[in-house]
Amino acid sequence: MTGFLIAVAVTVIVAWLIVKKYQPHAVLLIAGLFLLAATAVLFPETSILYGKTKSTGWVGFDVFNYVKESMGVQAAGIGMIIMAAGGFAKYMDHIGATDAMVEVCIGPLRLLKAPYVVLALGYAVGQVLNIFIPSAAGLAMLLLVTFYPTLVRLGVSRAAAAAMIGTTAVLDLGPASGTANLAAKTAGLDPAIYFVHYQVPVAVVTILVISVLTYLTARYFDRKDGHVVAMEAAGETSATGQHKKVPAIYSILPMVPLTLILVFSKLLVDGIKMDVVTAMIIGMLLALLCESVRTRDMREVLKGMMAFFDGMGRMFGRIVTLIICAETFAAGLKVIGAVDFMISAVHDGGLGITVMTLLMCAMVSATAIITGSGVAAFFSFASLTPAIAAKFGVGAVTMLLPMQLVAGLARSMSPVAGVIIAVSDAGQCSPFEIVRRTVIPLGGGLIATLLYSVIFV
Image 1 (cartoon, rainbow, N blue to C red):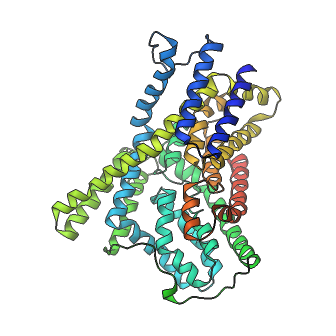
Image 2 (cartoon, rainbow, N blue to C red):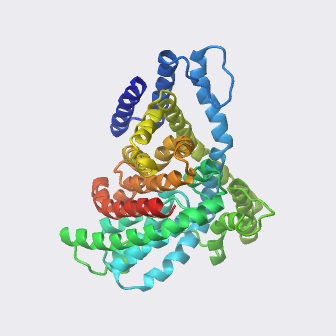
Image 3 (spheres, rainbow, N blue to C red):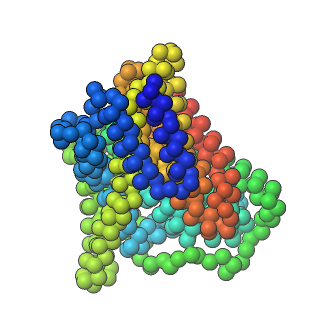
């Protein structure tokens, strides 16, 4: 009980600091170290070592050694996947392939003349694009450049268009997603199997619900705000960036890694294994070859390859380090006994796995809204689920799937999320105005996800 109360107090302080815009990385790391140190002092019989590592010889150094061990494991494991995906996305953007893909996917929607139907369909197309462009902020910026002006010219309000674009990456689908990869790894599943057999079925239902609610809420809020639907002249709304003119065939390049992962998996070719990092490298080199043929300037082509490594470095600095800090915080909650206390309370109360899953999803959602990061939220609690699921006699994926999906859904209901801040600037309104429009569609999507997961997974 003492450990649980300490953990609750620390968690409340962490939430308050993050709401006050203190750096999440530092807050989570320091809180995790404090919990590990408190465990070492109050409950010396409890091990605070990382996995099966050996003690440094003094428990004080063991606390910091935990972070070092976590850094090594995460950077070489899920962190490498995230860095490779970030590098690939950066290189695709550098050569103009992402622009080409967005143009191909968005083009058919421009033919419709019903603005709010286009808005709703735009969400669905954006969510599919997210499979190949795993960065929520990156995808949003691409859509702000390409699709946002079209929506506004069709008559949709700027706030409605910006809010929809801010929701296009909420489900974090596909093997290129860091949270999806962690969920698959933690559940002991192949990423392709997790994507096709688990993510896709629930995603279809959730996307449909969000699309319908996006249509209804956009019309409601636009009418409430006195917006008049009127088509603007083409020149009234300009794009916010420059497009690189590339061959249309470039639109398939972002799909190469996912195609390789799906083909060389248990779904199709079981004899050959293809991991995410290898697929990203192959995709990058194929794009490099295409660039060399197109430009015939090998000096510039090879120089452009640095975009891949710059993207990797940026992902390490912003995301992988956040994973390490979040894992340290989660480890502190676990070793001090807070998680075991909650599990015992639910288990002894006879509430079952469904209530425990909903409780974990609630914690993930609250963390995502407070921090503005679905990654931080999911990574903080994902490692705890196998042990919890085992105590209830179910597979870890039963809890991991809804937790992973609600983390992304809750992120776009946070006014401090980077993607929401980015689209609010384009929509010429406050992040709170954007969240006011996203809460209903994403709340509906969250409920649909939980219901589907509880009933069918």
